Length: 478
Ligand SMILES: Nc1ncnc2c1ncn2[C@@H]1O[C@H](COP(=O)(O)OP(=O)(O)O)[C@@H](O)[C@H]1O
Ligand SMILES: O=P(O)(O)O[C@H]1O[C@H](CO)[C@@H](O[C@H]2O[C@H](CO)[C@@H](O)[C@H](O)[C@H]2O)[C@H](O)[C@H]1O
Image (tube, rainbow, N blue to C red):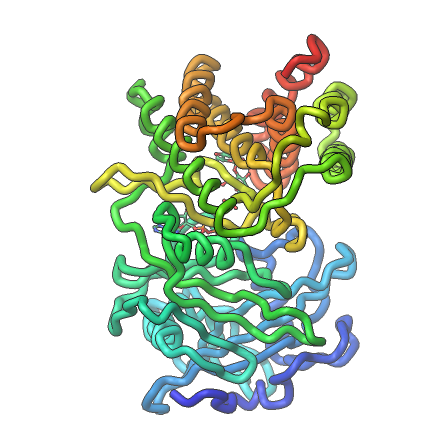
């Protein structure tokens, strides 16, 4: 496969470089024949971040075609498109991988996006390429070869062994992105909403792997796109070893709850693994002093997130005043807190982000993207480690609530996790003020997350909010 191969599909010829400025439905439209189909299809995708406001138009950002080596079959169309949602004030950029065929085999029918009414693809079936094993295999083949393809750049670790012929299988999971498993050997994660700057899900695992930390699957290959207007490249996909036979911490905790089995040993081991990852991150990447000004900014941001959340979920409003105390305590106790350092953290740590392999019972952490709703610059900033510890502690509370276990189970699991963490990273231990502020901040985030995605689950974080607020009312101690 040659580098910088020109796209073959006529639909792409005009628009292979950064597109024109955003346009509405009546403005210039680089993919006129596809746009109406995409406007219907995109909002139905689990990974589409702009649900609730209509897509009025698209601008093509980049286009490329990954061709088969023989050139006899159609290639995989790779598009980055900006979806205009004026009602939401957003123009987010999405990664699309499309196949085009005249006659779509029956097994690919669920992947159909539609058949354009006009234009160069008129009457042809346009479909989600990841569902087509031939096209998914083409993507893996392309990842094996470092180099350029138009606006795309492919990179790989020189020592990584990526065999040919691995059979692809799209992952059938509720995901913020899309993943394909290749022969139970590798998993390729394709980011859907993308922007300029390296994604921490590539940056951190790569730094960890290079520092010798084995708690995180090491990226073997990746690809990115040039961003328009001199911005940093956009990370598009990461290939990493697939931990076959593993189960995530959420499944394991609920499984243990269902049969009333002990989970403290697992929670302790998970705490230890988290501490190891934190230690490796602090060694591999820069840390900063958690000085007074930084602490004030952290507290201010928490106040702002609380205000924004209370706008979205009115049930939060009665607790707002009491919750603020947790954030104010941070600055009130700054003399103690500012002896700490901030470092790179996972950023969205919960039980679902921890995988335990059946063979050796070892925990690994995955998905270092951080909370996708936060701006990339913020996700890449050093933070107190208490952010991650708080995330996992909240997760034990969730598991207890969903598994109908009551507070004692959660308290024991939380305690065990903290013991394991302390054993894995000897030192001053977690700061109680930071921990409480971060736990409150996380519960506020979860209230909004559940209100938007799983309203039936809203009582879970709301119960935590009520408890955290009562603690703040009752005493100034965390
Ligand atoms: N290295 C891996 N080995 C095995 N399974 C994995 C691996 N990475 C991810 N998974 C599975 O894929 C799911 C989605 O991965 P994740 O990185 O969390 O994607 P997203 O950010 O889209 O939610 C995980 O919940 C896990 O079940
Ligand atoms: O999809 P992501 O892994 O990026 O995370 C989002 O979805 C999570 C739910 O899948 C959500 O986590 C919340 O629910 C979990 C149980 O399903 C629980 O273990 C977590 O503690 C709780 O925060 C996460 O917040 C959200 O960012």
